[in-house]
Amino acid sequence: MGKCKLCGRGEAKIRLAYARLNLCRKCFTEKFFPNRVRRTVESYKMFPADASVAVAVSGGKDSAALLHSLREAFPAVQLVAVHLNLGIPEYSEAAERSVEALCRSLNVELKVYRLKDEEGFTIGDFKATKYGGKLCSVCGVVKRRRLGKIAAELKVDALVTGHNLDDTVESLMATFTGGDFQQLVRLKPVLPAQPPFPRKVKPFYRTPEREALLYAEILGLPFSRRKCPYLPGSRSLRGKRLLDLWEAEEPGFKYRMLAAFEKLIPLLEQAVPQPEYTYCRVCGLPSSQPVCADCRRIEALKGRKAA
Ligand SMILES: [Zn+2]
Ligand SMILES: [Zn+2]
Image (cartoon, rainbow, N blue to C red):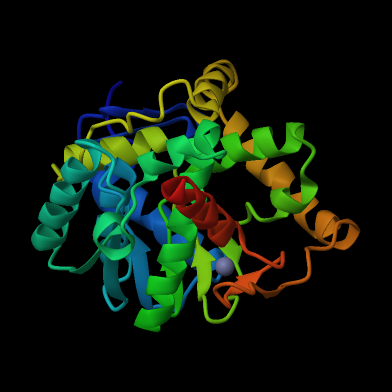
């Protein structure tokens, strides 16, 4: 691969085909990667350099790379890590241990919310409900609500999530082909605050998944490699594999998808208005329906338990 294109001295070890760039490990971890995070946060005005933010950390490579690179890119930002323990056998224990090790090594405050302890159920319990065939989507709803609530209690300026380029492009493809244009708009990198929930932002919006893994590996950050046992065969993994094939044939494809999406957003926002938000009559939190998605799922769970 020759010499690093940035410093001209180091041995290039990392090839970024979409940018025709070969980098040494040092330039990748100390410059290229955190610089892109900084530029992403700044160009989409995610939060100011002196903000306080809650970072959702799952225990995997993305959240490890996210927490570390945010600290590098924004030394004055006040970070608090938030971890949800979903009660998934083995997977969740390993995830929580990784998150603890990560936050200890980075000296970042950590809040852990254990679903089983706080609310008496786990994600697996939904298998017995009518939502059982869509555990990933239930999990998404459950996480979103609780992360939002915790971020609201912490009174932070933003809730930061580790969604990377591949996550976004995969969701774009799936949402687009599903014809759900209202949902498509919600894939943008900044979602406005919905009191009491703070705004939601994605600093890894332009960071490929492979590079988050490289970053976490090169720096030796603690993270769990366990895959969620409910995930194999999921739509999102299949979609990502297909997108990787496309990207290998046509480097830069994922970024072009993102660029096209960004041109589409203002048009969609005009043509497809977002639903009116009211308040859930069960929990009182913002919802587009009389009873929010979270409460409907919890109801289904209670129904099962009583039966
Ligand atoms: Zn270099
Ligand atoms: Zn509700």
